[in-house]
Length: 332
Image (cartoon, rainbow, N blue to C red; front, side, top):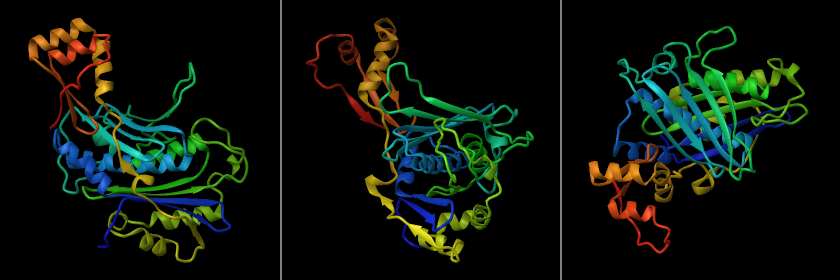
């Protein structure tokens, strides 16, 4: 296996209305799991789902180039109540899940969505675009689709759900291949470009809906992409993958995005945000918690960071004076 690093590759098919992206989250994805291990370890099927969601979120953010957070959510009535991946404009990402029941055993480490999330058939996928600098009264844009197709057939894989979502929201054909394990989360996106008009997930209108499913160039390339196996996506480097899949195509490749300019783990939690949350609870509620527990320990569900507030810290939250000594903080 070749040495791998977290990177995002963008490319175009010369002369064809087709674009592609390939993302490989390695050390950044391992950092997400390492931080979770410090507090709560997810079972392997949940880790795989979150890895696929992180890779998909990076691809979607890169695809629409939105100046705000792209939040991908899968939720339902299964053992996994909700799974979330969030990607910022600089491709900083984080992911977490809330598990409320036991998952069935599996030899492969993988479980379909109808077993993990969509047991009762009422599961949903939501994509939220939250602008970085909201105007007064501006609300995030959110699109929601069920975890089934147009004929109510269950969609068992995250890639199927997102392909369906992209077709409905953008009216553009999309092929998505996703895979994840404890070492890497990866994804390949192939999408037909609009022949004319503009639009994106934030609600723009396309003017070439008649092209859906009919473009021969896209169909050929999507077919080739679909031959990529999970094992190949997880073990082969980007150059090898693209060469094996599209060796007969003329590809225009852009410089890969790496390091802080590419996908990277980042959490937006802070002691200040936790302090604001506690202030919103009110002095009486905070003092009641301190009476019972002596200190308040708030852990971030995304990164495992712990913020601790004792009686002195809490008193400072409700004091107007700004000249305070720093409070206590610890990692667990």
